[in-house]
Image (cartoon, rainbow, N blue to C red; front, side, top):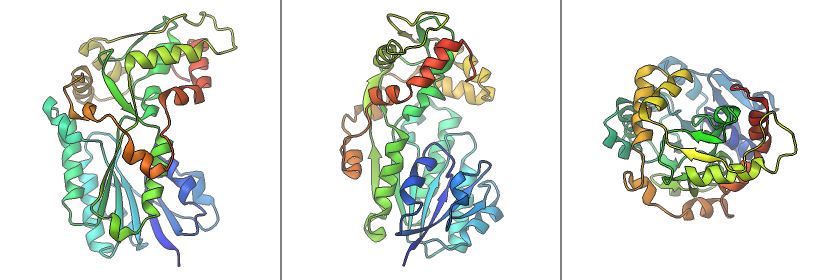
Length: 323
């Protein structure tokens, strides 16, 4: 008999990468608990769905009234997430106390960010603690820095659109980031779900990807751009240079991207102080857990950049900030 699997956040960066592995999988009967964006898979035969707001306890209880055997739970990297986790925990206890497993995709080692003493990351850590200390049957999965952040939070397409040949984001040139493709995260979550729930509860998987600095990323991206066949208004650079901008410039850019001033300030502090040796997350130099789950090598940053060549090409060639 198929297990009932409830997926929160199926339209997010990670959520939508999980769906191909669980939809139509005979092991699962799937229900998608989406917020604003309704995934196309909600209309697939046999798939159930419910609109939910984690900010509303009644809404979360309604989603859990489906009485799932397993749950995938995620909270975006955003301000004010603690009440969402509290509602989730309260609803699980009240409505679905017999759930076998909650696969919790959490912020990676966010407790270490407290060294910056920012309210934003204090809230992130409190959110993680709320779920882990709930007594619920949790399996924790901690992915490192998403490769998809290159074209979202880090704003590389916007920088390329300036046509200057220089990227300025905020971290030191030599700081290594453990880039991981969300496609790999989604597959890793699916692999955990395929295992026996009782044996997985209480485990913690730290998914570490391809260690590359911002300087290395810029060099790789330059090579990808020079493989493009279109003829942009500004010629593709022979060399793409990465430079660290100031904390003030970083904060201003985040505010222009739509972040609230207090959140932009916190994020700027974290990014500007993110350097080698400052955070223990930079000390992990292998991806054995990730590749053990995938049963294959993890996606490399070079491959991700090539897979998205059209995005970088359109950005540079168009000179537009919003693609």
